[in-house]
Image (spheres, rainbow, N blue to C red):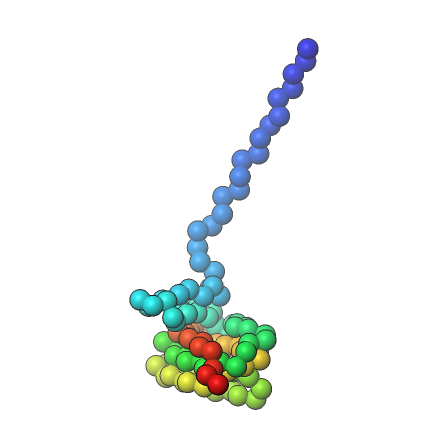
Length: 111
């Protein structure tokens, strides 16, 4: 009787770094999302978002552009805060050659 052995492949080790576009929950309530943007990076928060109240703060050092629905566009300098109604497509974009750190919250709009 001839028994053959199978060779096992070792699992591939993955890097433990956090991608630049990954959002994480912050704060004691976990209500805010922190998003790190690389220079000139565009991040789509959502494509079909229901009517919501959005609070967004640019923690710097770069300027970011916020698009929160049809035609609602605002550039935020470092340290600035914006509260707006958001719906449909929401994007955040780094506007400079500097990275940016953004803190944001989306809450359902009350009717």
